[in-house]
Amino acid sequence: MSVKHIGDLKKTECYGCSACVYSCPFGAITMERDSEGFRYPVVDEEKCTGCGKCRKICPSICPKDMSNAPEPESYAVWADDKLRMDSTSGGAFTLIARNILAQGGVVCGVVMDEKFHIFHTIATNEKEIEPMRRSKYVESDLGDMFPRIKELLEKGTKVLFTGTPCQVAGLKAYLGNKREGLIAVDLMCHGGTSPKVFERYLDETFGRENVKRFYFRTKYYGYNGTTCAVVLKDGQTYMGSGELDPFVKGSYRSLFLRKSCEDCKFASMPRQGDITIGDCWGIAKYKAELSDGRGTSLILVNNEKGRKIVEEISANTQVFEKVPLEAVTWKNRFKEHMQAHSQRDRFFEMLDYTSMHKAVKYCMENRYDVGVLGVWFGCNYGSIATYYGLMKQLQGLGLSVLMIDKPGFVGSDRELAEENHSRVFANTHFHVASAIN
Image (cartoon, rainbow, N blue to C red):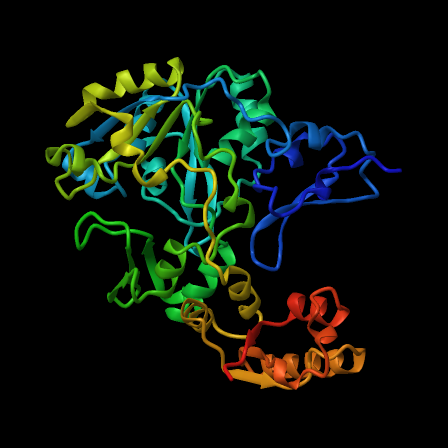
């Protein structure tokens, strides 16, 4: 019997951190996008020797690092007003990044290129960290960052890595005990959004070639989390609200969520980074003066290494105030279980035969184009195959299909039993609803 490798992980278990890729001594693992656009490890069986190293280093399989503070100190932070307006929240990332650069280090963060691909890269100066500002609510491509960071650390270069908690966990697992010089900052994230969905949104809504800049959040209408901004090359600006824009609406309702984000072991305390940063939502309920509409950052100090950095940046802040942890953990912001939208799987299915806009609308409103009423539930293979073929033909026309189940047409209760092969097939491949008599 062959030894299990990382390819045996379920999609609900894999966070896409890429630690396994660069830990494999035989180069047998690559990260590839699946049909939903998320990256997963793919194992070349001919190169794999079954050594099991990929599973030993996987943060999803290994126990969570519990060494950081279970109840970290928390701070509300403002940078200067100009920096805050150029940032998603209060400018904490830039303050930390500048500190590391001043010490001769480098910064590894997320940027978006002119084709709107989102990926991690390394900055060595102030100009290069500018594109790393502002949140990018799409799963980033880590590329070869882990081995590059390892090489820099081995040379004695201090490295600031910013990423989601699972990415930080993956980097730490990859480096093992060789982390001297690493400052890890994890972000309070809302789960990973598919790059495929983001690209489809841009192409269908504006044409990617017509877009000059995209901001996942803007402060044009004040400091809030539900408005995006798109600057077109012809000079026009589009503002997308959480009520009308399909990408914003779907993102904030977890319609595009990576499967493993529904059960994230790294979202809760203790956090994985030396420092955690994010929006200080709800701080006005604790102290109104800490929320002026320009953005307030939350900083969590998770260990002594993080404390040293935070103390160093405090002199460069406009506001730096310790706040109670309970004031910033309202609504279970650090819960492990996220609730994906009930029609999340249907949305990705619809992307294969219709537009992203229509898929969002129909899934949000639970709408269908065609209702099929017949004997598709019959306990014979001919019935199943016929109706499956009909459904696929209708989907080929860009139509969303609902199979209507009407027990009055069923010859016996046997055909309603969930264990019947017809029911198993229907529950796997069809969208089924009971008719109203």
